Each structure stands twice: as C-alpha cells, then as structure tokens.
Length: 359
Image (cartoon, rainbow, N blue to C red; front, top):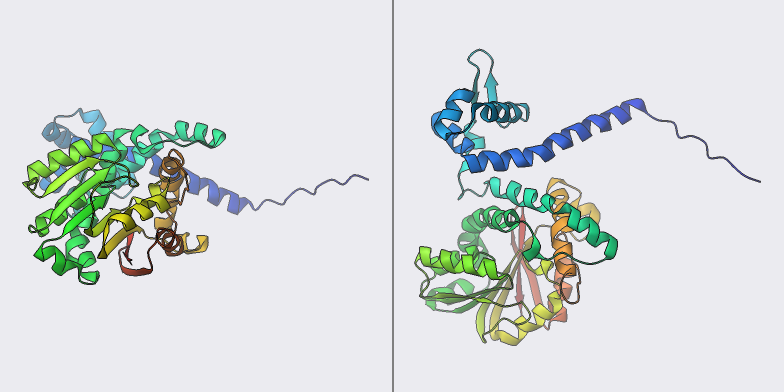
C-alpha cells in the first residue's frame, strides 16, 4: 500500500520575508566588492577628508571616472554606508563610519575584513571541487587579497590589545619581555604581531615563522621598514618544524585552527619552550557549542571556516580541521595532547579569545 506525502502548507508572508532577506544578502555580497573598490580607489579617505561631495567632485579628486563614482556612491547610500541629501545631491561619510573605513590603527577598522572575505569568495569554485573530493586547498593557493586582507583585519586588534592588555594578562610575561626574553611567533604571516612586540620590548629577541614563503618575504621587508631587524628574524618553517629552543614565550595568532596537525604543533612548542615558559594562543572568539556561535560574528567565522580555514587544514598532513569556531574545550584538548598541563582564558575581544598555556 503506497502513501502520498501531503503537500506542506506555505506561509506566504514567511516566504516573501525570506526572499527579501535574500535580496539583502545579495546586496551585501556585492558590497564586499564595493568596499574593497572604495578602499583601493581612495573614495572613503577622500570623503572623510572633504565632507559632503557630488559624484563629479569625488571623481575629480580621486582621478577616477564619474560614472563609477556615481554608482558607487548610490550603492553606498542604499546600504547606509554614506548618507545622501536630495536637496544638495551630495553624499556624506559619517564620522563614525569614516573611523571604521579609513583609520588602519582603529580596532574598528573594516576594509581588511572585506578584503579577506572577497578574496576568500573569489576561490569558491576550488572549494566546491575540494568538498566533492574530500581534499583541501592551501593558504598559499588563495588569492592575494586573502593574505593582505587577513593582516589588515587582524593587525588593528593586535595594535589595540596585544601590548596593552593581552601580554599583561599573562603571568609574569611582561616583565620577562622588558628584561629580555626569547620569543617565537609561529604562523606569523606578514609579521604584524612579531613587529608590534619587538617595538614594545626592545630588549627581547623575536623569531617569526610561517610555512608561506611569500608572507615571510613581506614580514622581512616590514621589519626593515619598522627598524627592528636587529632583534627580529623570520624563517620559512611549518609549525611542526620551526627552529630554536628554550623560548620564554611562544605565540600563535589566529593560526592554530588553520593547521593540519595542531597537536604536532603543540608537541613542537612543548619541545622548544623553556620549563617556565608560556605559550600564548590567540584564536577567533567562539563557544564550545554550535548554539553558542549562532550570531553575526560566528556566522562570519563559520563562513571563513568553510571556505578558507578548513580547506587549509585539510590540505596539510593529518588534516584535523578544527575549524574557525573550535571553541576553548577543543583548543585545550590540543594543548593537553601536546604535553601541556595548564590552560586558562585570560582575555577576549569581540573577535578574539586569548589563552595562556603552560607546561
């Protein structure tokens, strides 16, 4: 005897609400490109400096074509990034928005966030293929906007918190750095965190490492520009093989969850850290349960996890794929498996949580 499924009754209002929400999502997707465009063309900086402007004025000052400036401004006005005055036909970037869109040292700085998102989405087709095959897609394989945007997004938070809040929250570490300590910054990328620490603690010596050779090349250049090359060196090495010994402090900034073998990395840290040393792990803010992370920040991080971080882990040996929202319990399990016995959360921001790990 066969049965026929009864048709599901559709709530039309709920359907249309979802459709218009999806329309808003498409606009937001396109806006990522528009924000990167405005950042690269100097539109936000120009509006912040010159106040209410017409498309012609913006185009002339930035030496761009007026039709592009006009449509860009209209899109920004529709998204409430700028305001529009019909009487004067001028567009204004509010001062609060200007801070977020133009000040690279502000912890609210956003263009890097959009840049890494746009670069990540650019490579979606590769991730589709990887999902079908169960393979990975390496960090080094991604669009350059991923590498540049990552540093631009995280650096302002490091600039605002690393020296003033995070390091002082670690037991006894700040004084060690002032006196002169040996520090390994593992997965250092472009070296933003390494250089910030070197500038703040001139008596200490820093070794930054990353498996991505192009990032290390950039880090070396940045260190030279910052005038800290005398106490900072960078090496191309994986987290399981970086060199040195008896480090007073080992740091990992937003990188542990990207690693294919984070337990292997933890074991390597345990091998090279001093008996009274500290491992500082900075990870994306997350709770231990899915329901803890169903919020705007969690949504963004789960998106990055799907398209960027998990594929990066799966492209490496072991491929543990912790995910961007691993949560404190899983991070603690990794450190314990590596031979560490002490673990505590010492600080957090809207985007990061900081852990102190000790032998």
